[in-house]
Image (tube, rainbow, N blue to C red; front, side, top):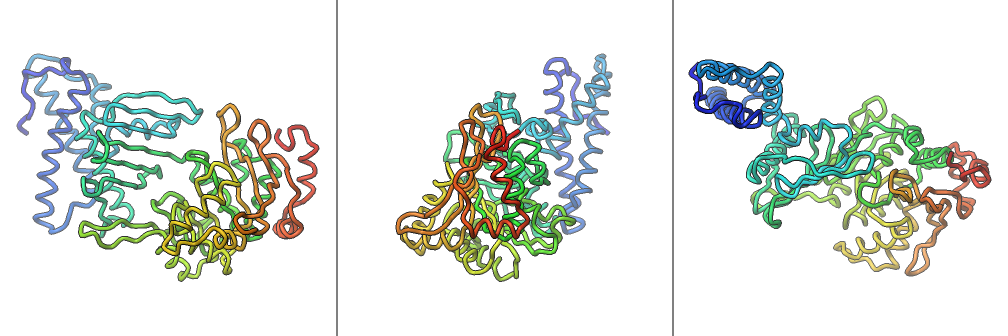
Amino acid sequence: MTSPFQPDAPASEGGEVTVARRIRRDVAERLTRATRAHEAVAGSPMPADERAAATRRLITEALDAYATAEMNAGRPPLRPDVESRVGRAVADMLLGAGGLQPLLADERVEEVNANGCDQVFVRYTDGHRAQVGPIADSDAEMVELIRRLAADAGRAESGGEGAEERRWDRAAPVLNLQLADGSRLHAIMSVTRRPALSIRRHGYVKVTLADLEQLGTVNLVLRELLAAAVRARLNVLIAGRTGAGKTTLLRALASAIPPHERLVTIEDTYELALDADKAIHPDVVPLQSREANVEGEGVIDMSMLFRSGLRMSPDRVIVGEIRGHEVIPMLNAMSQGNDGSLGTIHASSSAGTFNKLVLYAAQAPQRLDPATTNLLVAEAVHLVVHLGFTDHGSGRVLTSVREVVGADGLAVSSNEIFRPARDGRAVPGAPPSVGLLSALTKGGFDPELIDEARTAPGEGWR
């Protein structure tokens, strides 16, 4: 093989990064030629596994060629450990998530936010934040990286065939997708000075209420109450700010759903992954909204998905996040027999959830007035659960459980049966209504647990 490397550029001048860039450039060019040749002969794109194998082979050949060029120039080749790191870096660039790969591989990283290629900030699982190195050499390279991730996500969702179009350009500057590890990526360009991205990772894809008790998010009485609420088919909304753990709690609640039930999940980006564990949830239909194509057609919003999902004979409908006018078909479904439904919503408190529902309903095409919306909420929602952080901000905790008891004109009547204590943790508040207590008891809850929590040290928190 003729070496693409010239002997007038020793590796020591630019270090490993320079070598990795040169290897990547050479491999990318040769891979492009190989994939085009395959498509010309086969009439179809090169399969993903074949492309990955070809990429790794080309990386090995390029490293061998570089070593030969260095020795011919009278310089020592890369040390084995350095060559191994360069090979991994090039593979990450071409097969993995490029400069994002080390961050995605670090289990301590919970969020990644990049304002351009070199202004990169991460939040770790212990709550502290730090600025880290660049994720790409330029903003243009960052854009290409994100576009490749979008293409990979589209192929993964369709099993490699008939991939959904994932545009990200000036005409479609906003991108939402799920990465292979389950992380959620949001990227934006054109309407910002520099391309920007945010990645949120979920460390607990398969999680139970018992797991959350071990983590300190809930205590024994809350664990038992929430599990009973799911078994009793109460409709539950989970509220909280961004990053409070709403999706994780929703997954934990779903783990209490009997395996024989048929679930339909509705999301704007696949995130819940309830269909990933067939032992716990063997019958799941995950639905994801879709943006318009290049002709401006084909949009499927969450409201449309909700109506479609109800025609699929679900035992329960689970909404990843309520963000707009899908609130009306959701509330209608909850009030017309689809009990046991779950959903999340952004709200600063359990009481504030009702205001968000009113605002979303007012913005929907039906333009519901507040009084009508409140009547619908009172008929549909049984419990609102709020998640927050402890007073020192180090941990996510359940802060409030609110029972919906009715509607009174411009207000929803509710009892905060668990209220936030001084440190933010939920402690017993107003007594539950007789109807709620009866439903929870049928779901296996022991009412004495609430009384025991009232008198226990820490009010139920060890």
